[in-house]
Image (tube, rainbow, N blue to C red):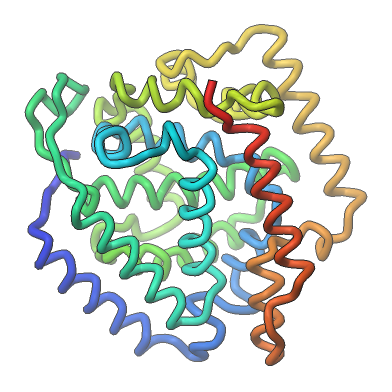
Length: 317
C-alpha cells in the first residue's frame, strides 16, 4: 500500500460529494451522523476510551506521512494542550454534534489539511527519501481513521473483556459515516469488521508503518507529565512489540506491573461507577440537544477537568 497524493481541488470535490451523501442518508440532522441507539454512541460515550489516546497517537505517528506533516506544519512541541483540545473538539463535533456542526468540523479539518504538503527527507520503510506527502492523502487518512476505531474497541476489550462480534460489526459500519467526513471513499474501506481487522494487522506488519526521526522526537515528549508513566505503560501494553521498541517505550517487569495495576484500577472503577458518571461531556450535551436543552455547565466543568487531566500526561519533557 503506497500513498496517493491527490490534487487539493479533487479532494475538496470528493468531500462535498461525501457530505451530500451523508445529508441525504441522515434521518435526523439534530442527531448528527450517528445518534441514540447507535453502536458508535454506545462505545464512544465512555471516558474510558481516553486510555487509548497514547496508542492511537503513536500508531498514527508511525505512518511517515503523519509524522512529517505534524513535525513540519504544527506547533505541537510548543502547544501540546492546544493541539489536544483542537483535535478532540473536531472529533467530538463530528461524532456527537448535529449534522451542521459535524460538516463544519469536516470542512475545517479539510481546509487545514489542504495546506499541509511536503516531502519525506529520509528513507522510511515503503517510502524512499523525497516521497511527497499530503495530509489529505486517502491512504494516510484511512490509517488515521483506522487507529481511532480500532483503539476504541481495543480499550473496551482490555477493560471489560471481549465485545460481542455483532456489536463490533455494527460499530464498524457506523464508523463509515465518520470516514465520509474525511472524504474516504467507501471502496477504500474493508467491507466488514473481520476484513478491517485484517487490514489493520497487515498494516501493522508492513513497512508502511516505519518510526521515522520526527515520529521518535514527537513521541518522546508525549508522556512527560505527572501521570505519564502510567499512561506510557498502558500504551506500551497496547502496541505491537515492533512499534513499542521503535518508539523506545520500556516494557520490563516494572512497566508490565504498572500497566496491569492501572488497567485493574480502571476496571474496578468502571464496575463501581454508573455509566452516566462516565459519559463524555460531548455525549451528555448531544443527549440534551435532542431534548431541546442547551449545553450544561456540568459538561463544561467536566470538559475542563478532562483537559487538565490530559495535561498531566502530555507535558513536554
